[in-house]
Image (tube, rainbow, N blue to C red; front, side, top):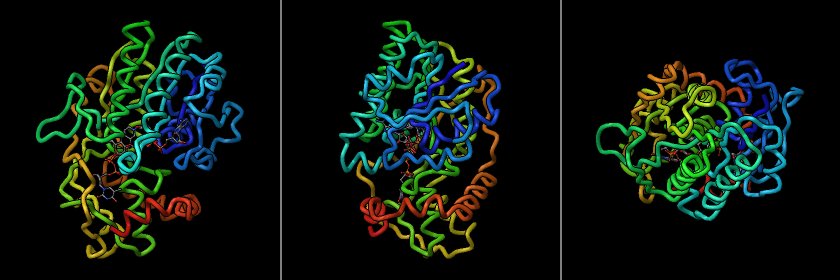
Length: 336
Ligand code: NAD
Ligand code: DAU
C-alpha cells in the first residue's frame, strides 16, 4: 500500500514517517511512503535523515496548493495523511495570509486530487484550537467550533472542507484533533523547544501574560499512534480527538523545564501577552479510546526528560534554525 504524507518534513509528520518506516504501525500495511513537503522555514529534511536512504521512501519538494504537483503525487496512493500546514499562532497573528493559502487552499487541493484519483482514505490532521478557549470541562467532537486565532480559523475551515467532501462526494475522510505536542525535532519557536534551547544557551525565557494559560500536553509519539489508528480503522466521515492526559499551566511547564535543567526560576520573564490568547484547551478524547483503543503511553515526566535530553544531544539539528533568517520572530519574542 502506498501512502502520501504531506508536511512529512515537519515536526509531527516526520515522526509519523520515521515510525511508519521502522515498523511502528504494522496495522497500516504500508510499504511505500511518498512525502510531499514545501520545506518552508518549518520543514527540515534532516528530520527525515534516519530514513532518507530507505528505498520505500520517496521525497518530493512541492506545495500542497499546486494542483499539478499534488495530482502527480497521489497517483497510485491508497491513503493520504495530510499534515502540511502553517502552524505557529504568533506568526498567524503577525500575518495570516500564508495560513489561509496553505491551510485552506492546500487542504481543498489535496481533497480534490484525492477524489479525482480515487484515493481510498484521507486523514486530515487538525487541532484542539478549533474549539476555542474553554473555561471549564472538555471539548468532545460535536462541540461547535469557535476558533479565536487566524491559525485556528484556517484549521477550522480546513476541517469543514474535509467534512464537506465526505458529505457531498462520499470521499472517506477522517479528521483528528490533537492537543499540544512535544518531543524531538520540534521547531524552536513553540513553547517547549524555544524554552529548552534558550535555557541550554543560558538565556531567559518569555512567558506570555500571567502564565496561567493551560494547555493539554501529549508526546508526539502518542499523537502519531492515534493518527495511525484512525488511518487504519477510523469510520468514514468521523472526527477523533486525541488527547494526552496532562493539563499544565504555562508557568508550571516553564518551572518544570527550568528545574529539570538545574537552573534558577529567575530565568523566566513575564512579557506582554499574545493577542487573543486562549486561556485553556482541554479535550474529551473518549471516542478514540472507546472505538479504537487509543491510550497515551508516554508518561509526561519521562517524555519531557527524554525531550530535554534530545535537544541537549542534538544541537546540530536546532542551532542552524536560529540563524539570522529566523531571528526576526524568535528574537522579538525573546526580547519582549
Ligand atoms: P510544523 O510547522 O513543524 O510542520 C509543518 C510542515 O508542513 C513543514 O514541514 C512545512 O514545510 C510543511 N508545509 C507548510 N506549508 C506547506 C505547503 N503549502 N505545501 C507543502 N508543505 C507545506 O507543524 P507540526 O507541528 O508538525 O504540525 C503538523 C500538523 O499537525 C499541522 O496540520 C498542525 O496544524 C497539526 N497539529 C499540530 C499540533 C502541535 O502541537 N504541533 C497539535 C495538533 C495538531
Ligand atoms: O493546541 C494545539 C496547538 O498547539 C497546535 O495546533 C499548534 O500548531 C501549536 O503551535 C500549539 O499552539 P499553541 O499556541 O498552544 O503553542 P505555543 O507553543 O505557541 O504556545 C503554548 C503556550 O505557551 C501558549 O499558551 C502560549 C505560551 N507561550 C508561547 C511561546 C512561544 C509563551 O508563554 N511564551 C512563548 O514564547
